[in-house]
Image 1 (cartoon, rainbow, N blue to C red):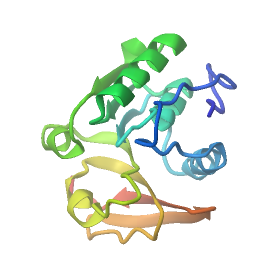
Image 2 (cartoon, one colour):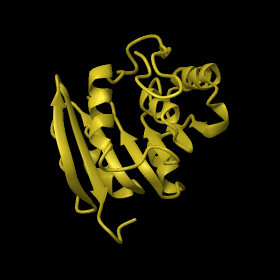
Image 3 (tube, rainbow, N blue to C red):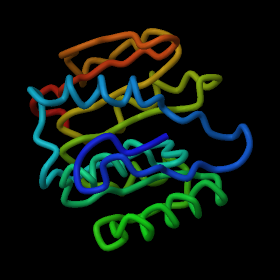
Length: 175
């Protein structure tokens, strides 16, 4: 795993040991950022990386000039790896790592420009989670098609191997 572009482009990302996280492939991540080019400006964006794992998506956003990224990861070891990556790349002052559940963080989270949601493939949390995400744009990553709720309008959808990617925009007035 590596950062694809920006100030840290080409540098390797440390991932947590074990099977507790499932890093997004570089190919899928590159595809997501290509799709986002016409949807949202990453530079100066406020980003939420939910079920962050290694933090690959949020680190990529910071490398591309995001103003601030909040990483949410309930596994303590994975959260520690994200903190280490932030220090290594010099992004710690533009990020916050919450070692907590996604649900508890979303209850108190302000609206952000972009949210990346990548729950464990075994969990089907979309129906409960989508109405609680307070973001202008959402990137969903799953192993099966994501059914959007009424708060979201689909903009783009792609498949990369087993990964299903959907980019959606919040319906005006629902945030």
